[in-house]
Amino acid sequence: MVDHFSGKPIVNQMVENTNHRLDALFAALSDQTRRAILLMLLDGDLTVKELAEPFEMSLAAVSKHIQILAKAGLLTQHKLGREKWCRLDPNALKPAAFWLESYGQFLDDSFELLEELIELQGISTENLASG
Image (cartoon, rainbow, N blue to C red):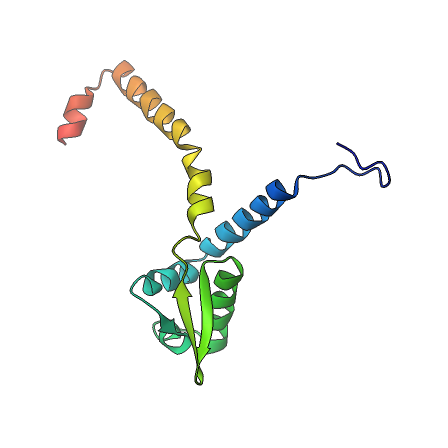
């Protein structure tokens, strides 16, 4: 569909928002420090200082990682007194999980093809399974 005034295509806002959300999620998850921060938050809320402790980087650098995670919706922050606390959002990964799940059929097909190739090579898959 085209906007008759501007001549530009009309983009479905829901699809565009979903794509931006997925881009932000996967970009946030692409860094090992950010994944480690998320793992730490699985045990409960932590302060920014507590999150920074195990990393050999400045508090400011860890704060930047936390901001990326927050922008992606993976965690929330709240201030209590002088400290900033972080909390993992347990539902934040659902869009990414749903997207990845849609590719599950390709994984199943790939494993079936691999098994056929192994059998064509004359290798018994039973011997491989028993290891």
